[in-house]
Length: 270
Image (cartoon, rainbow, N blue to C red; front, top):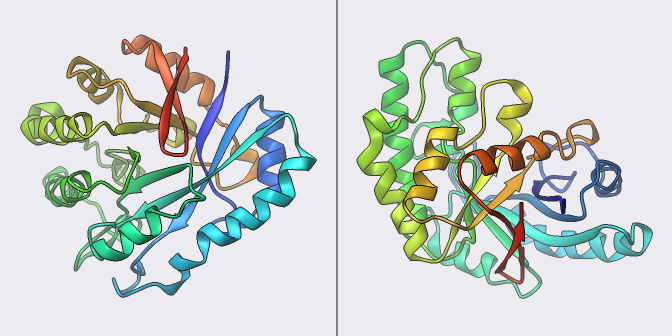
């Protein structure tokens, strides 16, 4: 089985303390054969939604470190990627960042809401309140999906993690949000883009992002492009639950997982 991990961070990301070399060695030790670093590249700051100059440094630093690292771990293919968040806030800058010729892969993600802030910092106390957050989340995620800078949408529905940690059983359910989820997925499919199966929720117990029902729905709509990512921020979590993610994709009707080189999906038999 050919194992890939297309969502991995290093200390280029503000929320990861681990050097790239430590992360890469841990991924290789876990059996990963192709790894893509997707460090945070946020055109706007999560604190105040204003321009974030750090976003212009991420690709260059990744390229520099990866070039030095490749000869040290020849058994591991290491690719250059970004987790480019809130891309609809400054579209011109987003497209500029995503067009860097050294990039292999871009995750389009959403961690904050305009005027509200980071999902991580919110208080969750009731299901109705959580549904309001999901409403706003889907609005902005659709704006990102309508753009063309990304290869794959990251961790759809991941905000459930913070609700679950707060003891609220809420989810991005087809029963309540089905029409909007269908529009989102059809947009992704029609553009030749894909989804990420983010395994971090499998690791901490609240489930994959997207969850099984949404994965099955995406596949039923004709979705084929899907990557798997551990979303690791420490060597201890490198490649965590990637194998379980592959198993889940098989159960949901997928025959292939994708890797990307220079924004071109390559289909690997599961």
